Length: 205
Image (cartoon, rainbow, N blue to C red; front, side, top):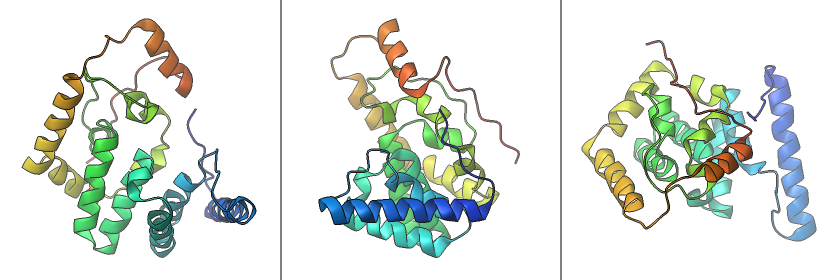
């Protein structure tokens, strides 16, 4: 099921504050974040959706201190890359774009409008499957401007990224694994509440 985001910016900000209060309460009560719902992954992107770059960067910095970018969820890390790019920290944005690709090989192609074809590789956690695209809110992709999409496309198609993508595919293809059977596919689809593969995203240039 896709994460629902309010249309009213005021309600989005209310949701942000609610998540922040709940996380703070967890920290006070347990000395750590339990966060079974995954609230921490939504806060940064929600700040971007209301054009609060300062709030987004402040949250992502806090997330980095508490967990590290490597512990981020793929769509969240993609939004994090966008925040750094808008801030002018292109080197950091490029690094997080690469981390996004390392976490899920389908998100960047989907962002830039390429056809999504499931790779014949071993997928580990549910975050690595192409079906995650049916869960990510469209607004996470729609907030990218044409200029930002052009940058992401150029970076993704650069020799550095092509080499890394090929490495990831080869690394996962060479690992011993059983072919994906109907039971495994059904289990993954059940996780996301899906019945079919995501279709190609159509973008207007």
